[in-house]
Image (cartoon, rainbow, N blue to C red; front, side, top):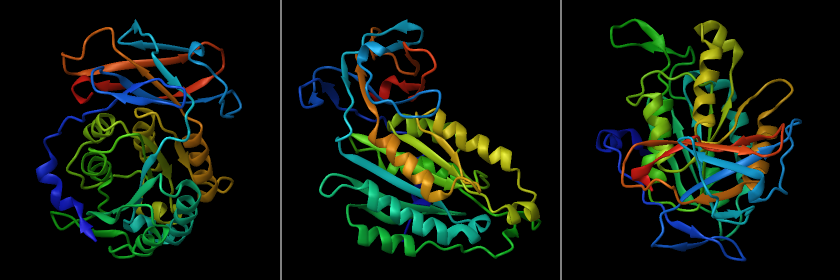
Length: 323
């Protein structure tokens, strides 16, 4: 296992991400070096939550910082290579859930990964962040990584804090997302996604939630979150379930993903299937900003559907110096 948390001090200075630029072609996007393009992936659902896959670029209205933009590159391309990371909370609050996460995670990898095209990696996080399996297309290696998932804190879920008082289990959720974005995805191109399984409670991260989300936006990652709560543990530890849900929702909404919650009616395996469907139903949209990219800073993106009652999931902005 590779302790990614040891790399954190060296990664505190965010490095810009250089994105490749797309041009349209009959068989999907190709790449050019002379045009700077902002790319975003979008998922569209109707009022009933069903995915829509028949829209054209004329069905979308795109704006940047309130200024209408022309969609120059558009495709409903689900065959593009996918790089995906699975981040699993292994703090004490997840002790009773690990077995289910192992089996559902393996089913997800088996279903989503296409031979000779897609890659995946696996990370765990508690008080530290560990890379259990680097990028691979091997289901055997990913299964071995899932077998290494373990909770190393006491079963009580509590440990002495800095002052000697009992504190909630350390859960470096923000650090995990930051490291996945900056360390794992920085040099990756194409479709990129992260799936985070956690109760959503962060304790002990060196990185703030805002900065973790910024790293994901700079790396152009779509983040899917799954809140999985052991209610027995939450009751004993006085855990604020709503607060955890809010954290995970921010990670997803601001990067164009979805936030899910495991419940009696919605099991983990079913949620993985929904994520797979969304990843296979994305629209790829590209545009050249009317305002040049010479000025750094965050730029707000608004993507809407011309039809009423449609919900669009897409990242809410980008950093100009990351293009």
